[in-house]
Structures are given as C-alpha cells and as structure tokens.
Image (cartoon, rainbow, N blue to C red; front, side, top):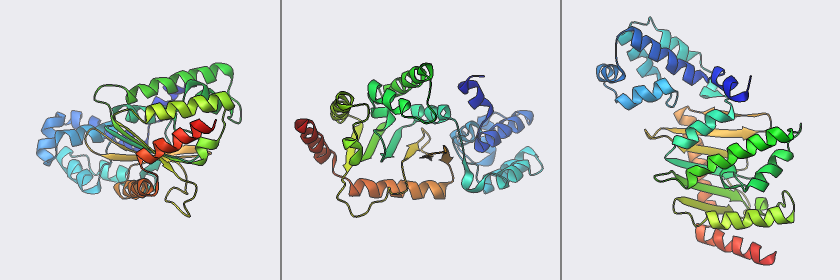
Length: 274
C-alpha cells in the first residue's frame, strides 16, 4: 500500500464527522443548499464541514441532529473528538489544504521552509533523516516538494508570509554550493508579488516562536487551520480558540522580525560575504 492510499483511509476525526453529516443529509433527501437554508447557515459552511475543512460546533451539531433526526449522533461524535480537536494527519492532507488556501503563514526555525527550498536543499533535508530514506523515496519526496512550490507562482495564488529564524540562514545544509544557491533562491523569492519573507534576528532576547515551527492557513471560506510539526509527527489544530492562539503567535513573530526590506538587505549581506 503506498502512502497516498493509506492517508485516505486514516482520515482525521473532523473529516470523518463531516463524512457522517454528508451521509445523514443525503439519507434525509437534502442538498447542501437546502440543508443550509433550513439551518440558517451558508451553503459553504455545510460544504466545508462535510469536507473536513471547518470544525462542527456544538450548537450547529445540535441543530443538524434535530433537522436530520439523527438521534444526537453528530453531537455525540463531536463530544468524543480528540482533545482540542487535534489529530495527526499524513502530509498529503496538509498539501491538499495548502494548495487551496488563500493565505499561508509559516514560521520555521530549523530549515528553510519547504515552499522555499531549492531541489538540492530539499534532497539534503531528506538525506538527513534518521532512519534514512532510500534514494528512490528521496527522489519521490523531492519531486512532490518541488511541485508544491507551484502555488507561489500560479495566477490568483495565496498570499504567503514566511518568518524564518536567522540561524537557519547560517546552516550550510548540503555543503557550501547548496547553501549559497539556497540563499540566492530565497532572495529571488523575496521579490515575488504575493510573498513576504521576514528574518527573525538572533539578537532578540525572546520571541513568540520558541515552541517550534508551525503554519496557519486560511481556507477559501475564510476558516483558519493551524498545523504544527514535531520530531515524532505533526498535527492539525482546528479548534477556533487554539487556532487563534497560533495566529496571535504568528502576528507577534512578524512584529519581532525584521521587515521584508530589512530581510532582503540581510540576505544581500550574507551573499556578499560568501
């Protein structure tokens, strides 16, 4: 079984609950538009809940249970979701959300963000993995990472903001040539019209990103999702209160970082020193 087919079976709790809603709705004979009208909701809200992009809230679950005569099934399912509605997902599911997002905010303190990596840098990242990936898997993962970057160049693409901790720029991952090429690529990406790159300087006595890297995405229906990474896996955060915390962290990081113009100047100086 390949990773992509396995990811489809290991759906998130939120997506599973949304799928249940879709089954109940169809069994009751309603379209998404008809159910939304009955529940006094936007059609996009029903669509997003069923797709797993929007969290089902208790009051909406109770209303839908009543309208669909589901004997409290949605409310019971919601009450038994994992704490904080945080759940592990395969990386493919993150990419699905990333590709449809209208805004992406990314904080990285270990390596250059994947959307900004050169091919050789991405290969070096995957070769650093313990336990080691095989060469075929490295090639597959590198190809997928490069394809993700199309989102930075497509028409009507998302607004993308990166905050990168300064030590990342000094990490010669892959060797001197790979490192310089990566800095040059960062500098070029900083000129893209919908991309903002800000460097969080090392001389800050404290900052909001000490807990590690994370992403905040805004979906087409203006719902926010957050995604955090760790050594042993990654998890989505869909609970609005928890996402709000991470969005506030990111806003603070942007205020603590150099401006985009100052960040370009820092990259220019680093390239001049090499």
